[in-house]
Image (cartoon, rainbow, N blue to C red; front, side):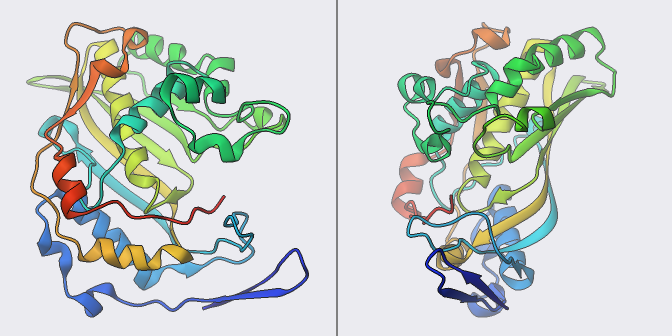
Amino acid sequence: MKAVDTLKDGSEYIVELDNFDVEEKYGNCNYLTDNYADRLHKDVIRNILLNGRLDHNPRPHYADGIPAHTLSINHVMHKYDISKGQLPLITLRPIAIGNAKKEILWIYQDASNDLDVLVNKYGITWWNDWKIEGENTIGQVYGATVKRHNLMRNLLNDIKNNPDGRRHIMSLWQDDDFKEPHGLKPCCYLTTYNVRHEEDGDYLDMSMHQRSADFLVAHSVNLIQYVILMCLVARHCGYKPGVFAWFADNVQIYDRHIAEAEILYQRHGIECTPSLWINPEKTDFYDMTMDDIKIIGYPMKEIKEVNPQLKFDLGI
């Protein structure tokens, strides 16, 4: 596959990528892990490298100005039964769980787009690349949309007052908001919630819809942070966490991440059964703090030693 771009200086940039089967190249590496999330992760890596299509004229660019092309596939869905201990946490590389918690609280609890809040309260700087010129925010997206449309409070009230309703939907995709200055449009843009009655109790299931998933860099962080959101909503509304489903319209690996994808596919997963702990003394969504949310049983130290972090050239 081949794509030709015209750079700012008028010169041509040509990218050529060929599909290949990592299983044929390295053998079936899924047997190297018993971790459910690891196996799903490797399946998607193989699918993209084998069947992914090369994009043309991409919006993102690398820091050196070169267009950030991707191989991608459309329409991917995964399910995790949180009630049965299936957390979407891979062990093929360390996942920044702390930052995942911080970002989800910034968006939905603080309902903020303010980068000063994100940096000073949480110590996160990765959103700075989408800063709006002339102000220290990411514009009218994400937390600003949550605040303007009172999305979080409306959702919590709706589930509590009409639990069996089928309209428990929270959408960050608000076209009128996009008419104002903004940075990156929401990738994880929609969540839907359903109460399910079982003999052993009542559960809250959630689906998260994602228009675009940078699979190697952000995907794993996105999944665990939305599981955290689901569990906080369930706690607030008086339900047990149930099934979490992830739907993605387009899932991609960047052209400069192919080597890292091959490394991840070959790695041995680490046997573990992580679980999510939420302070049992708290129920109110808005009272929850970082200390009230913990992942237990995720062997971060061992993962860092056995499967160290990889560096990714980001497309912005």
